[in-house]
Image 1 (cartoon, one colour):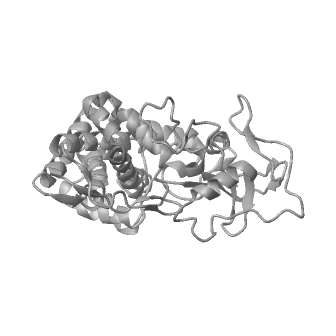
Image 2 (spheres, rainbow, N blue to C red):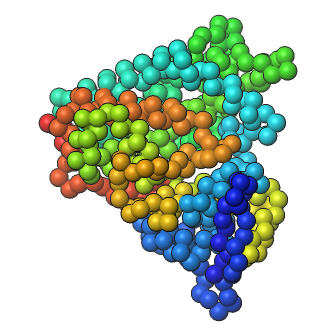
Image 3 (tube, rainbow, N blue to C red):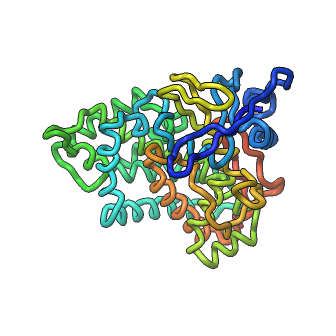
Length: 390
């Protein structure tokens, strides 16, 4: 058995535990095994129990699956995001400074204006469905609202929401890179914000200075792309799973309706049980030594967030959705210095979405046939949500 990787007390990193797989033991299971994308949970149980740190040759990465180990790996400074251009990929010397630029626009008056815009969009989308008898909430709600929220945050024209949504569907997520067409779209807006700034996030980035000079256009566009990633696949899948979990549990949905203060807890519990991103990749800057061997510098490490969220050593009855669960953990949008900047926008979007749906659709429930199965290996969630509205 490979060595277990555990979190060193106070160190925030990984340390080895004794033990390793013998030469006569069968090869470990793989993320590439048939059927894993349809149901990864049996594999996750095997990995957590018998292979908490193992090299998956077919997948091309070391796998970390237990809650404490995944949390430690996500925060370990020796394990960094693979090359890219979003905020999580910036060099250490600029990372904190650029992240700090966005914080003022996610507080106070700017946050209130952003919330008002997202609430407005959520109610418009929900009320459009209110005279219908049935709908697919993924296609008609979940894929639209996160894109609207990101466009609102950046102060982009709302008539461009459909274009942004398509870019997001093509793979712009909080883990991903920018898009050539998106760059061409954003650069004129950056130039206008430099000349005539407002109170939106794009204005904050466009007018920010570092060393007496404005941030380069490439940096501004990359950071804006990170925020637009909050309107991408990860957030719409998270929103779809959130609604599906509540539809699966009418008593909990009723409780949230009666006590809206529970919405943040219901969202956090859904992210634990059904995170939109199951595999977060990291790359070793230096050799990482474990009892099973050495992960060489440059090797990829797959942090299995989907496995960590259902670790029975961390969560009682981990497969159960329970909005009253204490401390459901916060790994779905990363941890440590690479925690996704879009987490606050995603949470605000989810809260506005549920409030609007509960008000506009008081009889919301599954259509005959119930919840469709979630699918996906790296990103995962229901692709449709067929519901009855009347």
